[in-house]
Image 1 (cartoon, rainbow over the protein chains, first blue to last red):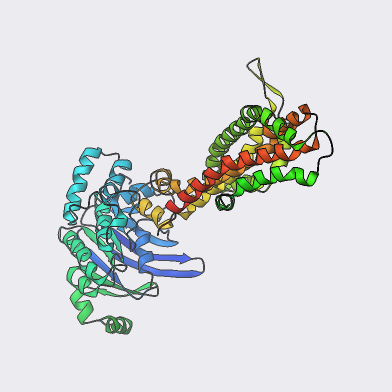
Image 2 (image 1 turned 90 degrees about the vertical axis):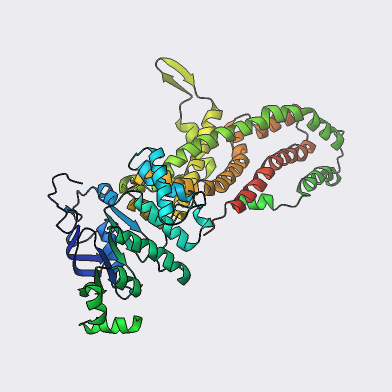
Amino acid sequence: MNAETNWTPDQPMVSATDVHKSFGELEVLKGVSMDVMKGECVCIIGPSGSGKSTFIRCINALNDIQQGSITVEGQEVNDPNLNKLELRKKVGMVFQQYNLFPHKTALENIMMAPVKVLKQDPKEVEDRARELIKKVRLEGKEDNYPGELSGGQQQRVAIARSLAMRPDVMLFDEVTAALDPETVKEVLVTIQQLAEEGMTCILVTHEMGFAREVANHIYFTDRGIIVEHGPPDTFFDDAKDPRTKEFLSQIL
Amino acid sequence: MMVSRWIAGLPWWTPVAILALIFAWPLTAAAQGKFTYTDAMGELFRWMPFLLTKGFLFNVIISFFAMGIGTMAGACLGLAQISQNPATRNLAKFATQAFRNSPWLVLLYIVLLALPFEIVIFGIIVPVPDWMKAVIGLALPIMANVSEVVRGAVQSVPTAQWEASEALAFSRMQTLWQIILPQCFKRMIPPWMNWYAILTMATPLCSLLGVEELITLSRQAMEGSDNHPELLVPFYGFAMLIFFAYCYPIARWTISLERKYAVKL
């Protein structure tokens, strides 16, 4: 990341302005803007195909954008000279399908990036990885391979794997969508704990109850634009836009 | 995998059948001359140690060298095929397809004629014997096919694995070597062994270049035994038996590894 960015913690940690993104002819983001302050937890909800997953993938440059601006701690992401690796050291991401490395144990999955990418001392990283295992309540599963763990357990390893890089922002892309209803809760509790500790979180989720309880701010997207946003209580109890109302009436 | 599966699927009595054919031959030939079938078999047994130690062993040596060179070159070519640089990628794709789809014998002749019989390195004359050219000629199609094995294995790893590593700030090279290749390495072994079996069975092609391997020596041995037509079936049948005995265990092993490493998703 450029040392000369004048970012200070009172400015938005993640700031998106008029973001446009197309896949060929299909425009999936048609001018999305949002600001996320340090320590905030933001939930993006909306019908499938509304562009919400695409949007958070743009934040760590997994997708590029055609127009507009996204900054992370003042660093412009929509920049051809962007050092993507430096950006991604600051932005952790957890996926719907966990995407753990199947040939590595839970502990190795967590240790890999700090050791190989950040070149940190393996001993120190291992201590930290064991702490993280404890944090996501998976003591005893250190030496299990992903294939031996349940979906919820794998997802918690994936969260720990991301946290091991000590990111400033965490992106969660529908992380409970592939889980059994019983295991959804154990993952949500982990995320809630993170949010309460002050981690900046951006979540794409379908868990309305969770969003209401944990989020500082809710964004509702539909067909590539943000239709409505606000604090959870206002959003859920007093939605203004007919599309939001319709969506909420179907979900709740 | 087709070849290994076919060989491994042959019934246990295949070598017996080949032997039976060798022994049944004189019944149809109804030898009228003085040279009987028993004499032919006697000649075969007399030549057998020579054919094995000077002939077939050389086929094995050629196959080892060709496989080694082909594998190393093929691994590089396969990785070039998944390069992000379009020029590298397209060149590697073209080379792979060109060598994969050329007749092996044509490649052998091209190498034989294109390479000099000696090269000069720092004033020292290093001869390039025909068997070395044969090794290179056989290594070319192996290279192309190993290249495809590598490309296929790498692409069999879900793209989500690339994304997960990218999101953890792994560079592309780190992702390839730390995450992707360790996952698909085992998957490359069965097809790689299959190509080894195919290569071994192709080594008699070298006899056409005058390399003294099993078939060349069998022909010379038959000439040494006055070229009686009765010699043909025992000698070539023996060659077939040797190749079968060598390739059959490899094929069985390939199939069992293939089952063991089958992609579990």
